[in-house]
Length: 338
Ligand code: KG4
Ligand code: ZN
Image (tube, rainbow, N blue to C red; front, side, top):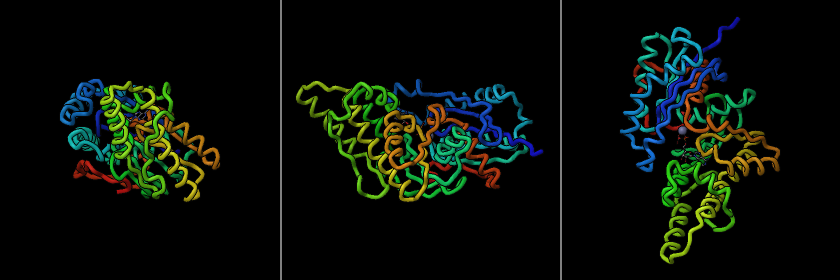
């Protein structure tokens, strides 16, 4: 009988220190996430140096907890999977150094994983039957990419943002309205009580292929807020949130459906922190239904940063022989498919 493959995965590219144990790539035995959100809240965003230091403090505990919860020991692990980019270089290095030390000591293969490819792979955990090819819309704090998943670990970028990432736009708008950090979940919640047609914010690049742009929308919202303040007029934050969110979501969903149709695929998968957005899920599902396209998205815990998704991507790299040696370094601007 074929032996099960057990993966120990580590993720530390931003403000979550995470470790997961997986069986055969898609079965999550444990998924421990220690978030630093509270720590960074007072600064209104992630402070890289603070994040790195906290990762160092957290990582031994997080790894031990993942082993305990999965009821395995280091001796059961077949390979290590670890994020080596993109992300904050100091933060990535903490997880990567720890992973290298583990791989070296245990004498097992080290598999470096692209964080963004990890986000896409969260969909394989969520839906055990999902197989490439399909299109994926990757929307996170640092990325907005429309990508063709041709096979496991084989990606082709169709389009991306020319300026701000969609999650970044959510965070910046929330900050401008003093709503707190991270902005996405707060805006998502407020928007439910607002009118999405209240303010007509711009939809950029609607007719320009698969690229995106969110900086014009961000400026339009900031100008709206400033004009209201100058005139001493009341700002209905719920309406601003709903109208802004609708402008983001409409562009994202329209392009994702267009790409899926044009490429002739029957499935589109959402990935990344913004995939948690309820309006995006709704809009995409609605538009997809009309075209007979299936929509996949990971459960909330698998949308934002976690190590289970890194383990899944790492497993496919591992079985396809894509392993690294001890010279693997952090690549802060690592591109998808590299
Ligand atoms: O993927 P992620 O956890 O980290 C990165 O790799 O960037 O994504 C974090 C981003 C943040 O910008 C956050 O505001 C956004 O995802 N986000 C959301 C929601 N939940 C998280 N954006 C919109 N709606 C949400 N519900
Ligand atoms: Zn991420």
